[in-house]
Image 1: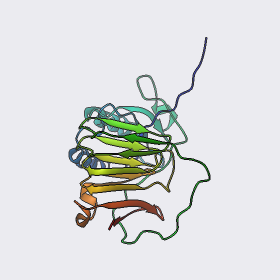
Image 2: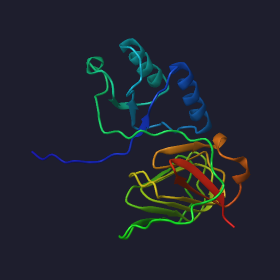
Image 3: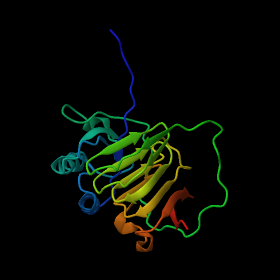
Length: 224
């Protein structure tokens, strides 16, 4: 008998009170980015959330109705996780949505003293496609359609229009960046910090931009 270990990427949802308001915001996100949670594993983090066992069960039911597949729960009372419930997990990283980008990029950057693997995608990425490369950079020669996504462990470079989602730094790399020739994104994220289209300064749309993190905030600036 052999046992093999594998690592999988999962989206972490951390509800906030009131739950009804949080679910409404979740519905808005799903509406702006159709199919975002389709076939995507999700960890539900309720650490520090003051709810009862009944509230917890109702929350799982609400997520199930939205076809959000909860594969594990972090921070729940062990007595809540009986038969038919997702298992308890630990070690999840807290994330948040940041709303206000700043205007200027940092002038100094750190460098890692090792080569970073990269993946070159030489064709446009069509709606419904996911390009996942946790080992390093992803470069796309072409556009990324609405409903498509690029997920990279390091930086993302798109030589075309980004109309879908770009998720960089997924292995905990806060120094990752996103470079886009024509910015029309549904969603961007770096090291777990997300912004949706409605949260990004509209002056960046249609322009060449870069995005990066500084002081745990998403920042953007035009290129050229």
